[in-house]
Image (cartoon, rainbow, N blue to C red):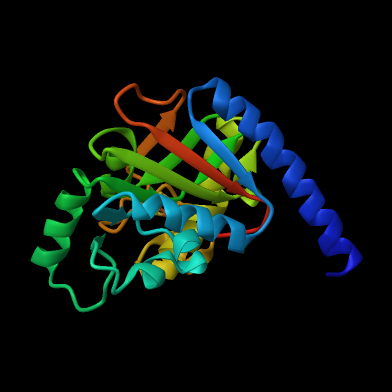
Amino acid sequence: MGKVEVLYQWFLQKRAERCAQALEKNGFHTRVFPDLPTAIDHILETCEEVQSIGFGGSLTLAQLGIYRALEGSGKTLLNHGLPHLSPQERMEILRQQQTCQLFLTSTNAVTLDGKLVNMDGTGNRVSAMAFGPEKVVVVAGANKIVPDVSAAIQRIKEYAAPMNAKRLGFDTPCANTGFCADCSSPRRICNILTILEKCPPRTPIHVILIAQSLGL
Ligand code: SF4
């Protein structure tokens, strides 16, 4: 690693540690990992305890290779992003995710005062994060840490949503121009904003912060 990369990782680690303290105060179980291998081992250990696992369509989880690592494990893997699924099959998986044992997802932003901020088009991800699954694990690179809720919304609208719309191949203004136009597109991905201010009482949420740049 070069000097700049070492400095950046130190910076992300410090931000993750500060953020973790605030998340814990808000009732979220939180762990900070310095790198991908240690985080992946921890996530896979958590997966060993359950039979059904839902995936919240996260680029971060794809980068970590969690789905691939679990293929062939005999567990029920609920991944609505598989290319061969029909619309009906995809919808059925989205419904099953709401009651799975473990729901794995990332978050669009996490604030230094310990809140999880997300924007969804359909709502399957944010609803499963709040209630339904027996346990939720949220995995995020420390690049998603922002000062507060207003910075989180700004991060989503100016960065994450246009990049995600482009990634998903949606025909939205932002996927063409790179800028949000507060559109009325049928493929708009900004329909539901959730702010988990504190951990909901019936959904244990574990947040895994990694001192790396991950996801969008
Ligand atoms: S409101 Fe529309 S244009 Fe703006 S970021 Fe969301 S999908 Fe893109």
